[in-house]
Image (cartoon, rainbow, N blue to C red; front, side, top):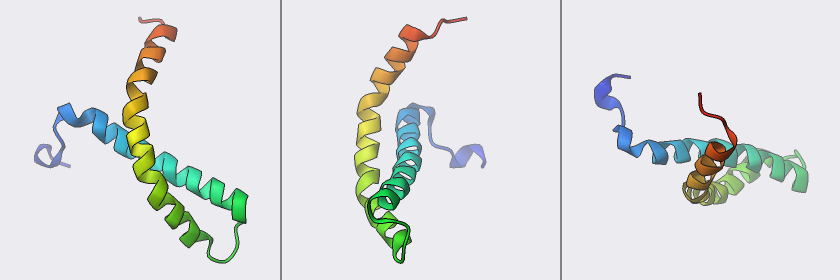
Length: 80
C-alpha cells in the first residue's frame, strides 16, 4: 500500500476502533450464536445477522472505552 492510499495519522483512533470492533464483534457473534442456538443449518447466516447488529455497537463502544483503557494501562504499566 503506497503512501497516497493510506489514511492520515490523525484518524488512528477511529481506524483502530473500526478494526478492533470488527474483529471482536465477529468473533463474539460466532461464539454467542453457537452457544445460544448451536452450530447447525443456517449458522453462518445467523452469525452474519448477529454481526450486523454487533459491529456498529462495538465500534461506538470501542470509541468510548478506548480513552479509559489507555489511561488504565498508563496507571498499571511502568514506563521505560
